[in-house]
Image (cartoon, rainbow, N blue to C red; front, side, top):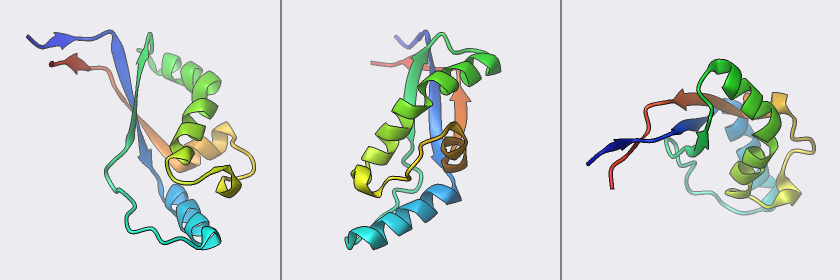
Amino acid sequence: MIKNTEYTALVLVRRESFYEWLQMAVHQSGEESESTFEGDYGTYLVKGVITPEDVYAFLQSGYREIFENELSQWYDRAFWPHELTPELFLEFFEVQVHRQVYHAG
């Protein structure tokens, strides 16, 4: 039986600024990147985030942990931007909010 959950899904869609940073990091690291994993976005399930105000408050307090997790999927800290600010987070990611999250397993 499919059940509704108490969670909201926050999906981080990478913006052009993210891909520009990624190209720079690839160049600086000397490694090759075969894919940008277009369409494979980080999805975070959070409790108690329902309204736009809730989303804003959650991101103000929790953006850094999410930002660090997203960047760590690509490169170590040596290639990260120097300052991980809320403004840079929103330049790198569009945050899509999905409140209809179901457990189907």
